[in-house]
Amino acid sequence: MIEIITERSDWNDILKTVDHCDFYHTYHYHYLSKGEDETPILIHYEEEGASIILPLMIRDIEGTSYKDVTSVYGYAGPLCSTKKLNFENTNFKSELQKLFIEQKIVSVFSRLHPYIEHQEEILADIGEISSPGEVVYIDLTLPLDLQRQQYSSRLKTYINKSRKVCSVRKGTSEQDIRAFIDIYYENMRRVHADDSYFFNDRYFYQFMLSSFFKTELLLCVINETDEIIGGAMFIKMDDIVQYHLSGYKEKYLNLNAIKLIIDTMRIDASEEGYKYFNLGGGKGVKNDSLYAFKSTFSKNHRPAKFWKYIVNPKVYKDLVEKRGEQLSEKTNDGESNFFPAYRQIPKSH
Image (cartoon, rainbow, N blue to C red):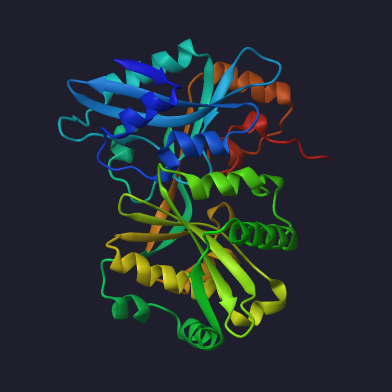
C-alpha cells in the first residue's frame, strides 16, 4: 500500500512509527520552509506491517501540466521501521514509480541524512545517489576532553581568549529573538547570501515556539556591557543536535562569538546524552572556507548525499530542450550539482 499524506495530524502520527527521525522530517519544518509554489507531502508505503515514509515538497513545472519534487533545506530522505522491513525493495520501487507517474511527477531530488541508517538500501536502484562533499560532526559519545583534543590548536586559543571576556546564555525572550534576527540578517547581507536565506520573522518565532522539536537559541554577550554580539540556533531531536543558523556582529569578529557558542553547545549536548552534533558542510557542501571553519572542531566527517531520480526520461528530455539548455557532457553524466536541469537558469552569452 502506498499513499500521499498532506494532513498535519496524520503526518505526525506516521512519523511516530519509524525508528529514527530528525526535525527536517516533521510537518512543522516543511510548513515553515515551503515556498509559495510548494506543497509538503509525505509518501507512506506499507508492506507486511513495515513502513517507509518519504517527506518531499511537490511543485508545478511552469507552463506544463507536470510537477516535480524536491526536499527541504537540510537533511531529509526516507525513514523506515525496521522491525519487519525487508530491504529487497522491488515492490517499493514499483509502487513509488506508479505513484509518481500518476501524479505526473517528472523528477525527484532529495538531500539524504548523514546519520540515519538504511536510506541507501531503501532507494537502491531508484535513480542515483551521489556524494558531492562532506559534513562535519562532533561525536558527543566521547568524553569531553577527547572531543576537545580534536580541536585545532588555534581554535582552542580563540575559545580560551573569548571565555575571558564573554559568556554564553540561552535566548528566551522576544527581545533576545529579535536581537538574533537582526544580527543574522546583518550577517547574511555581509556574505551576500542568496534571498532564500532571508527568512521572515515568523520563521524564527515559530521555530522557538515549536512543540515538535526542541530549538535552543544561544547568545554570546560581552561580560562588561551585556551586549549581544552573536547567536546561533540549534535544533535537538532524537539523538542529534543540528547547527541550524548563526550570525555575529562584524565589529566583534576578534571575540569569536560563534566558536564559543558551538563549544558551549557541545558541552551541554554531551551532558544531555545526545550522540551526534552535526555542524554541516560548506556552501552547497563544497570544501570552502565555511567547511574549513567547521573542520577546526572535529576530524569526524560523513559524506553528504544527494538522491536524483528522473521518473519520466522522455518528458524530462523535452523540458530540457524546451528550456534551450546547451548541456555539457559533465551535466549529462550527473556530475553537475544542478538538478533538475530544466530548472537551471540559462546563462547569457
